[in-house]
Image 1 (cartoon, rainbow, N blue to C red):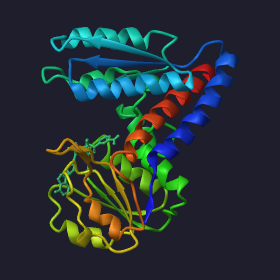
Image 2 (cartoon, protein in one colour):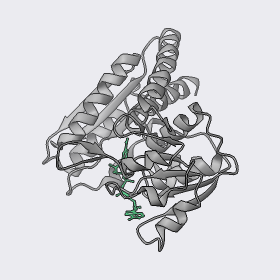
Image 3 (cartoon, rainbow, N blue to C red):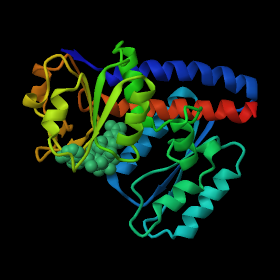
Length: 282
Ligand code: NAD
């Protein structure tokens, strides 16, 4: 079984981005700017934001974190987004999710200018990507495609099954697989017989958010399996949506941690670079 090593592929992507950032910084006289809006004290979000800051710094992107207290109002967060929209040194904006419950997430994400949409979640970006036009792509599914390409997994004509239909992972994942000419099935919480759907798959992308949902008996030998899920178990260790025993039958499997996670951050840097390039061309 081949391990789909996200750390390795992410470091290749980062090196590529770093070289281009250095060249374009000289050309345009300033580095790309990525601003992250972090509201509240969610411990996982704090770690994710720290990692994004570190990665941006590594490739020469100017990362800025705008921290607001848990009690921040909709108007206060909106004012920060508006300020960043109007700042010419900011090329990419990301509002870290989840937001505190009292805030309207959709309204805040829609407020980000599509030309600064670091996460590719704005409806304009989603629509453009669905119409096969250029758009920043949602980082996690984009990272999965990048990883599969690195390992030469030919997707054309393959039966691919995506487990999950969220706006952030499942749906865009299915679209990107379709763009690669795979034959795509989307499974979700109301799917009647998940095992039957999975057994037909040649490529599985698991993003159900359910620890170790997919077991060995649900996977045909030789299948390529990508595990997007990330969960902390009772013993403190991390696991994905795919049980470790699937490694006994899969031809390729992404580990958790060290699989899709590092790819997500690498693709955020790629999106920031692309938006920077666009803003200087337009
Ligand atoms: P979500 O909860 O928004 O969506 C989960 C989806 O799975 C839903 O569409 C639901 O219909 C489906 N689902 C739930 N139970 C199912 C079942 N038993 N059978 C089939 N489908 C089922 O979650 P999300 O935001 O898409 O994230 C999914 C997982 O990926 C989570 O574990 C999350 O932490 C992880 N994640 C990881 C990264 C990363 O960078 N590694 C990024 C984003 C999300």
